[in-house]
Image (cartoon, rainbow, N blue to C red; front, side, top):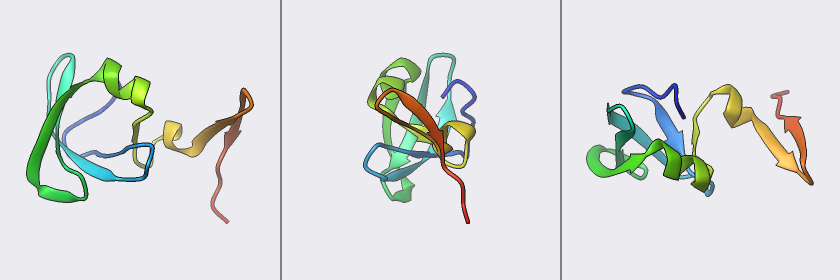
Length: 76
C-alpha cells in the first residue's frame, strides 16, 4: 500500500472496492465502499496492510498465499 496514489481503487479482503480520495504521509482518505462519490474514512497504511487490503490491479493484488506458499493468479 505504500505506492498508493489518488484515484487508485482499493479492495478489502471481502472484495468491496473504494476509491482513494487523498493521500498524506502516513494515511489516506477513501470513498465509501462501492460508492465512489461519497467520502468514507481515513486509514493509516499500517492498519490496512494488517487487514489485507490491496490496490486493485497491482502486483500484490494477484498473489495469494496458501499454507505459507505464494501463488500468482493469472488470467486465461
